[in-house]
Image 1: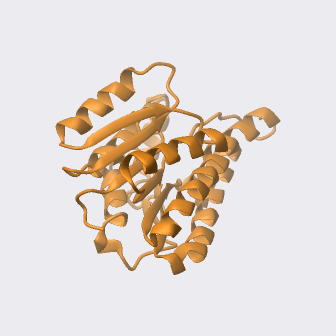
Image 2: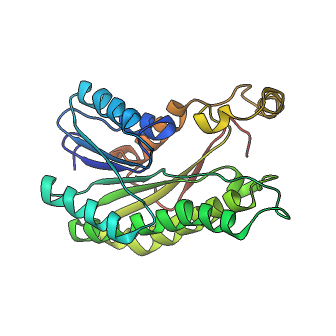
Length: 248
C-alpha cells in the first residue's frame, strides 16, 4: 500500500517517543490512531492537534494494552471505521525500578504485563487483521538494556529482551502472509522517563555514547518510519539499535 492512506496504530502515543513516532508516520490522507494510559487527556489532545495539523485523521483512546478485550475492541473499531490496519507500533511501556533483591514480585509482574504481555496482545490482534490483508508492518520498541541488562531494571530488561524474541518469532510466523515484524532498541533518549535520572548519572551515561550525545525521540521515530516504509520491504525479524553506538 502507498504511504498515503495508511491506517496506523501507535501504543503509548500521547507523549515522548510515542508522540514523535505518530508525527513521523503522519501522511496527508492517512489515519494515525494511538493509545495512552495517562491520568488525563491533556497530552493526548495535544498530540491529536499536532497530527491534524499535518493533514491526517487522528484519534487517541485510553485503554490497557495488556487487556485483550480492550485491545480487540479498539482494533475492531479501527477496521470498521477505516477498512484496514497497515501499521502497528508497540511503544507503550513503563518502569518500576529497584535492585533485584529488593524488587517485589508485583513490581516485576507489572512491568512485564505492560511491556511484554501488552506487546504480545496487540501483536496478536493486529496480526489477525494483517494476515487477512496479506500485508502490514509491525514495529516493537525494545531497549538497549534488553541486550545488556541494567542495574535496578531486572523487570524492564527482561521485558525488553522478551520483546526482541517475540519480534523474531512473529517475523517467522507472519512472513508468509506478507506481514513484516521488526524492532527498534533505543539507548539513552531524552524523554520524561529519563528526565528523572540525576544529572550526574546522566552525564556518565552520555560519556559512554560514542556519538557524544543522548538521543532525541525523533531519532527513534525516524528509524521506525523507515521500517514501516517500502524502503524496508526486505527487512523482517531485525532489531535496530538506535543508541548512538552505545551498543554495537
